[in-house]
Image 1: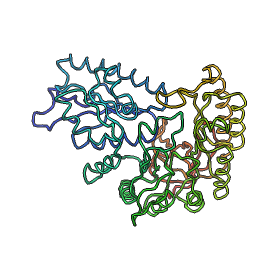
Image 2: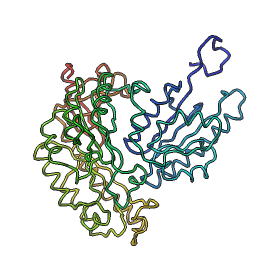
Image 3: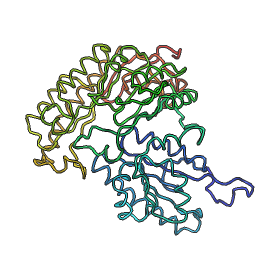
Image 4: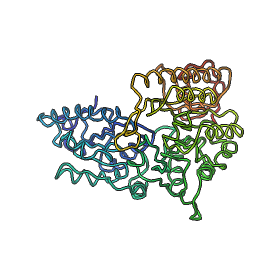
Length: 472
């Protein structure tokens, strides 16, 4: 058992005990990336991550503002953290420093003042473009509580401060990693808060992305997922200073030794350029899986959402992608119960789902977000109606996902093994289609890509057996 900081049994000449950092992440993959980078920037200060808030010196809630329930969960969690903080302050045997609590991410950006008012235990509120300033903020918080920072959008400053030359290498330990290449969104869908919490679209320079990707590959990363609120709108400066595209970036990343797989999310149908579609047929490294949200199958509802595309445009994009990569798996996002949605509109959504035949999808009831145009629209759909529609949609989507997984039985797929399973010797990895795959007697293959014969497919995973020990 590890000795707790300050234990009398610790030798007097031992170095200072590491400070414990607990980060709880809500929402999207970009928040997962941001949380990893927060841990990176705090590591030089002696912080080591822990799996629990109990006993942590610094607790960060990295928040998501997309849905109402997500924001309320943050306030519920803050109530629990306040109890831990108060208990620590009243315990003479506890470490001398008080627990510091920070709220980061999109809720922090949108509701900073409200957070400080509702929960006095919060010491810091940090927007998504300012977490690189956490070391400085911690120093200032030791003198005075209650700083809010991050109202201005300056992503370039954040990424400039997060280079390995300044804070050391990323603390990635597995064979997969996220890599943010684009932030913000200019689409202004009427239901979405992202333009208000993440700002306008901004893309990182290609050279910076390649540097980070090479460092990840050198640490054993085999698969990178490129992240952005609207990632296929990427237009970062290329080697010659002119704007690049996501397709050209993917081609450059595919040349990095050791990097075998590329993915990207989340995309907008209007930004599926011809060269990006072509890249799906040209690059073996670009996995045959595309997450392409549509939100609704109704042309009328899509106009109300300000999606700037209709179902025909969306379906045409799907057809063109499948023409160059016939085996591609399509994933999507759906919102049911959007203001004004009728039974006919919902039937249009079901019809689109049947036509596309999704391998996986995410679906939600509409949730009004304060400050968005949709929140003030008339004809809000009753919750009971929206809930019934969501059930019908998810039933169809789950049937399609289960059928897609079952269709893999008998195929041999290259699987990248990521972690140990529950059973002794079991290993869990990902297929090219992002399915979870588990095999027995594969623990020694973690970090490798190995041929696996799929024996069965369920709704959420595949089971297989190793047919080739030679790793790719």
